[in-house]
Amino acid sequence: MFKKILIANRGEIALRVLRACREMGIASVAVHSTADTDAMHVRLADESVCIGPALARDSYLNMPAIISAALVTGAEAIHPGYGFLSENAKFAEMVEAHGLVFIGPTAEHIRMMGDKITAKTTMAELGVPLVPGSPGELSSLEEAHEVAERIKFPVLIKAAAGGGGRGMKVARSKEELDSAWREARAEALAAFGNNAVYMEKYLDKPRHIELQILADNYGDVVHIGERDCSLQRRHQKVLEEAGSPAITAEARDALGKTATDALKKFGYRNAGTLEFLYQDGQFAFIEMNTRLQVEHPVSEMISGLDLVREQIRIAAGEKLGYTQADIQFSGHAIECRITAEDPETFTPSPGKVDMFHVPGGLGVRVDSALYAGYRVPPHYDSLIAKLVAYGRDRDEAIARMSRALREFVITGVKTTIPLHQKILANPEFQKGDYTIHWLERFVSQG
Ligand code: ADP
Image (cartoon, rainbow, N blue to C red; front, side):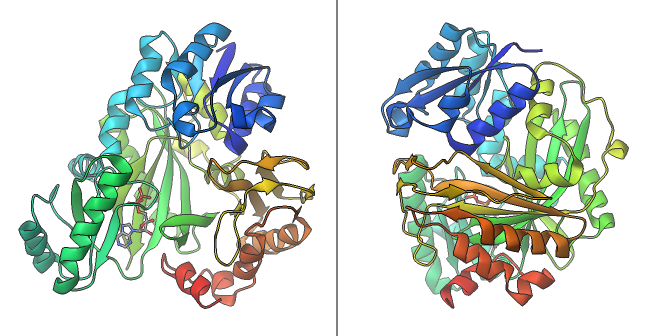
């Protein structure tokens, strides 16, 4: 097992990784920007190294600085968390070229799945069903028109290099296609430096269902169940649950078998997530994330597994040591992503946190790097806390989440706690009756 791990991230996920390290008796090295000198991940780590100025491209995306920090401190492995360099194949390559272990999949697999067109063609070859669409990159606007005629409007133009919901435009009719094509390509170029786009049928009432995967270096692959991440705003997840209120155990098992068979053939290693849209009883693959996800705690709560610990064990060359049959799901978990934003306008609200009181009690988990007196910097993602509630069933999880949200006190910055309270109190949500379009409508109705 590793003796020391460098955590190439900040915020709650840096703490999450640090906690797993500490429980495993592994020393941790935090890296931080000059804006994060007082951050909790720096305070709690065994060692810390400043890797650059506030702007992410100068610090948390600064590959040479991070690798130097690992070499100088004698860390043997790097955990990238999510975001920043976690899906950067070049970084994974650089880490390994310096004799360090990248806690994640191979650079080749990161590269393949990072291109959503390659990801889709690869998964199709491995027997995973897809959303109908263009066979690959759209070569011209004429081809876009041809494909749209074939699959029928509405259609969605998506960026091959897409992420974070950017570079995605809906066209509901022939007339809208030209502008969707232009806008998606321009946005993709600006955000990712790559204007390759493809087309998918725009599904009108799907749920976003994703499957958590763990694979060791010896060909064993298991799934840790599904998460329902349909509650989204601007294609970004807001609240997630495990399991999905819309999926039966049989459907989960069938999807799990298709996915684990595919990833066995693919030779995947470490943690990953296959994302699907689910409509009319059919699953259709949209993309794979080759990293730990923000919403991983809900899967941990219903499986009892520590996914970061599993990632570290796998990266150190240990075998999974269990089979699919050993993984038992029990109860229900919900996660609310609490961001420092206005709960109605969603304008970011960085600044000094005056009071910070976290909820507690049975079945409540808070993953956060906040503390009273901390200043939320304006430079990074606005996620400030993940509140997770567990219950023996979904109703119990909802009741616990509702009361935990009432106990949570964060003052000084605006937060989305009031939005989550409204969602939890809604009868449609309580029935589990929602699609990926539900929250957008709910928010716009006030
Ligand atoms: P990103 O990588 O930018 O997050 P995804 O491909 O994962 O993009 O899609 C993000 C979200 O956009 C999905 O969870 C879903 O809500 C919506 N979406 C993506 N593809 C489709 C589609 N074909 N039809 C309807 N909604 C879609």
